[in-house]
Length: 352
Image (cartoon, rainbow, N blue to C red):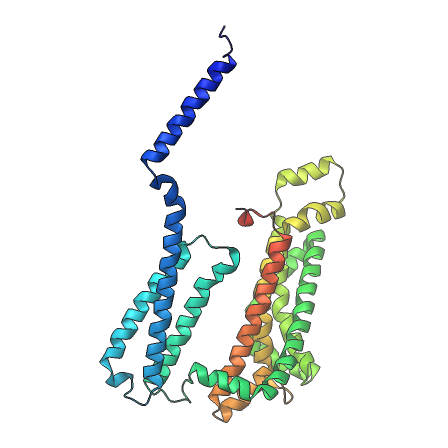
């Protein structure tokens, strides 16, 4: 049997261990310093690359918008663009490797989006692309500001149709999925129709809805409701069927009813599938409403504005309307993604 160590022996062992650790740290001072110095140098390098990208971008824009020769007559501009592309790639790589706080994680996609707009601006202005074919980003922004009094009522008209159709279609799809889960013959009858309805083009049902519901936003909401109904139905049924069999057996051992099992187990488990349908439908509803406005609309609506301004060759206004719809769709999608993150935090995909 081993005797317990005395307090004096324990203190001696502890002192020797501390002395060994201190000697190791003194012998290799960069072992601890490298943990903090290297990330700091890495961040400074990323900042320096970002500053170089901004400076070179400003110089290229000054050359393109100046009164001198255009891009096809400036070989040095080609070299500058090549160097700029290399700097952007290095900066994106640095930003992707940094262990950033959550708000700073938007730097990489923000830089990439700005780079795409920069290439668009330089290509259109530097090579004198006609505005009718493709306006520059600054021309689109100018049209958005100068025609805001026209585009804002158009946006509100389309937004009402999108939100109404989205709510009706997703709500009806969710209710139909719960009913089909309860009644088996409805599931067997509706699921084949879901694939058939998904193949129906929007341009085919839009004129019919305009004839049924008139030229106001109601017909566009009806188109959005039809388009968003079946994705919600199919995804919800898939989520309800994905519940683990062992968990269902456990609920049976507790003598839980169908409604209790649905509310406490199957419906919460189907939330990732439901939110997947909500995110898909956020873009489908917007696209379907805008397309439906091409086939009959009052004097307001983004689809109507795009159709009217294309006929007048005001392509910059068309791109401004497209930018408004794209930005609104992205914000709508992001809002639903935030709601998903808050309600499905328990899902394995969100675990660190």
